[in-house]
Length: 236
Image 1 (cartoon, rainbow, N blue to C red):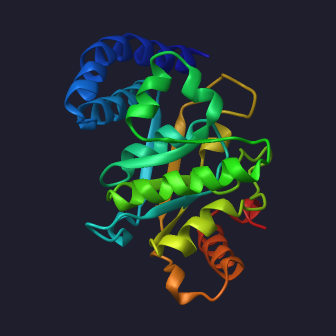
Image 2: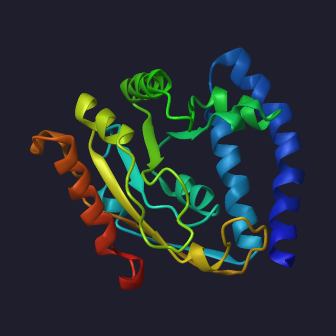
């Protein structure tokens, strides 16, 4: 529980002064980079102090100067803060709509052009999310998505959501599969307790939508790539 308290304390203590300075700056100048970079720095500090070590492989697979869609499996609440700071350049991400309503944090997400997603299965809402993501990619900003749509309770991969693959086929943006493991032992679903340890992120070679005839074929190729670097017990 000590690691959890350290992480929460670091985030709270550093986020308040950071928000006071960088949110008004972003509003008045339109430059969100100081807010984005400071937020990632806070996460890095918090993870280091609470004993979470991030082992990253394959970053050289990411095409330079090109907006990509990063597609990762999801086993813990620790995954997004572990992954986003390691992505080269700025990334947006799909987030639960409810997070946009959280004071200060929600404002930061909106300024960072994060994309709200509703889980009620509404087709119109899903189409709006995909359209918003397309506009973000056109600005040269990456998109990050956890393609299962929710955390796996067991660590084994769940079925993938279709939305990110609609987006990929429509835009042609390179898909970067990312395998995440290790975090499932550090923070279980529905728990705030954090155990120090090593989180592994493996960035795979790009999967290009133009090489596939159907969305389903693209999905299966990304799934196979993510699965290839996971421990055997986490695979299908």
